[in-house]
Length: 341
Image (cartoon, rainbow, N blue to C red; front, side, top):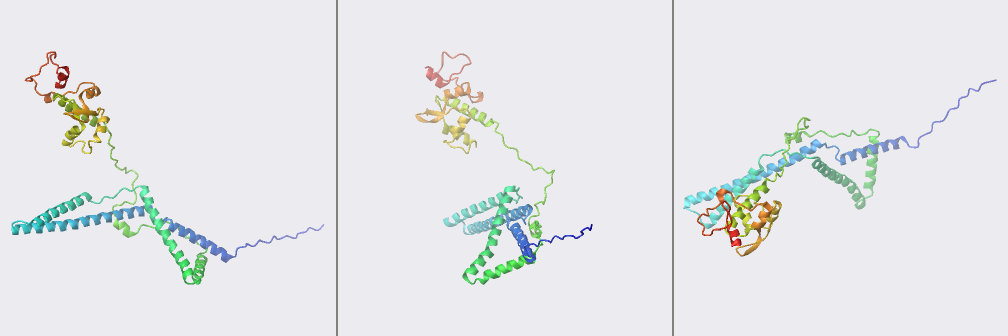
């Protein structure tokens, strides 16, 4: 029997995409990816953005210092000129005296501004600030991409349709020339001029460097004890004068005279007193009714009657008013004696 050795060859299927069209499509894809990479701001690293932010702030700080310095020098010159005029003429007229005071005030104001600005310190930026700057870059670049497209559409609409035709042909030619050669999508290095402008910004932070964190102030309640003691002394002293209590406004005035509770007013201070456990109600003192602290109510809150330290207790040995029922070592206030009598 004869053996059939005939081999059947399977024909290779032909692709439906011509090589030229496939090359053009691949080039268009690579160009689109590169444009998206650029428009998304991915060519700029976080370090470059940090340096740009620091550079902008340093330049703004230097400009502010220079402007205040210029205005301060001008104000000092005006003041010196007016003082020389006063020495030569034996004084100044009213208008020049006003101008001298204004010049001194302006010079002092600009000198204080320069002192407040001080030396520029490199800020510590958080990721949110870097993201915000990157979004600004993305917005600017996306707007820049819309300009050529808008120019082509406007030229085709207002001038001739050949503008659109030439634009399409140019784009296809660029895609065909690029072909199957992808772009290298990397983060560009930091420009040398940016590094020179911000030499204090370190490129990396060592892992063993721990930022110094300022301790958070903890409310220990010391201010409450101090306020309660002050109010106790003030109310006890008022009781010696036969008054039923002290108005809130008078308590606040006494505190602010010693540079305490300067940010409070007579409307906000009652809440501070209540936070310290001091009862506040309407008190009639010398015929005037207003919010205040009563002697008896304060005693209930403190758990004892308000009292003064020994060095603040007045000498009552010559007082004409005596209490026959007063025990030795016991002190009754004038208000108490008036109520008892």
